Length: 211
Length: 343
Image (cartoon, rainbow over all chains, first blue to last red; front, side, top):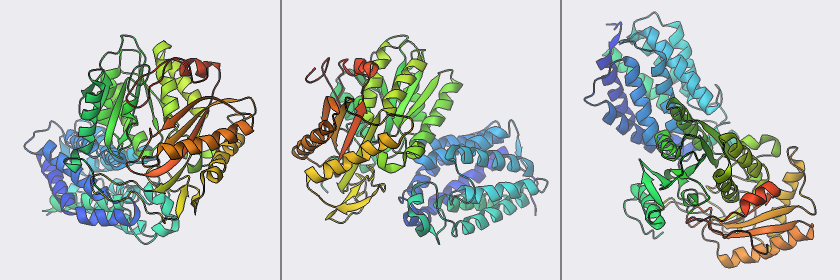
């Protein structure tokens, strides 16, 4: 059954589920990054998500935004490097943008993804087509604007679908940003590791909201 | 690779602890992983450096007397996260603002920028000057894409001296920018270093080849060329510096009568013997063009573990930069008396 909205505590639980899923996916992320980058994305995300679990477990948050900002700060502080800054910015900018919302509906989701994606694009000076995490985020954010009036479970499912399609599309892109940029044409045929992470995060959020 | 370490994941924390011990009270360990001078005068404009660990003695070894006030230290070869940048910023700020001076790498820029935003939330004024001296990492028109390498040492030395005498953050920013603009470096890599946590090499290269312009983490440069004798390789490398000054619209070409600091750096494993042989060739090449060597630095200061390789940096001096260069300084990385050799 469609779920209209998620409470603050449900959002917290959802992000704990995301953390577990990313930790579980470490070998997949490592392989994806080894093909194109320096191979440290999986371990970095695992470290970041362990910090997220510490920051969220057994805690109470005053707003939905603070949960996402907590996720962002935990990732930023524990991961370092470009991916810590970018995933940290995604959740911090997204969480900040929804102010004092006490539930997560399709509307908040649309704002989080829009502002979070813009934050990442500014910070990383990346645009769609550069073969980065933006290639999963940007279509997800656009889709979320279209479906903002739907129940949150359906909005998340639509955004997750768009992110997965974006991840797949990144396989056909030539890297121009990040460490893979020096590979040029050789980066064809593999997805960007950051886009793989974004797709897993949104799919897990969608699974939680639908269950 | 035999490495004298403990837990591979604690290498960065433990080396900074050891560095603080080496300073014997002159500096202290701050927050998650920063090193900061124990005594920073009130109302001083602060200078903060930083970057990934594993390149010792820089950056954190450049904290000291008439040098940087503090360093935000990242994990091995990784930028310091924003909370570390913020902790270091708070510790060095004396109400006159903080200049961030560090190498131009995407991860460092993102994390220091977020650190600056967090500092701004707390009312601390921050300005940033990026170091981009590696001429082989992008053409002059795209300096924003260049990496920062060994030229950071003379730049931080000059900025550190200036930070003692200026009264505003804007003045310090201007001196640092000038030092960056007049500094260019070129390097070659002969063999990789290793990643301390895994023991794996930082890059692969044919044993008979060297990477011309390759970055200190193995980033691509101009290309691979066969290994060559010092007297052949040195002028070939320095030519990249001459060409770059010539092609860059923002600076004059290096010309007869110009005075430069020449810095010959080892990436780690290349010996002082080799550096001195290269230094001799570099001096011949520079003085042959009528360029005067104002002062010389030589040694392994910007390294990547046991990486083998060498870089040349030149900083063109003017009266203002000379004034700051001639001030004495002292740190674990770099110390000098007042004045200069031969001065």
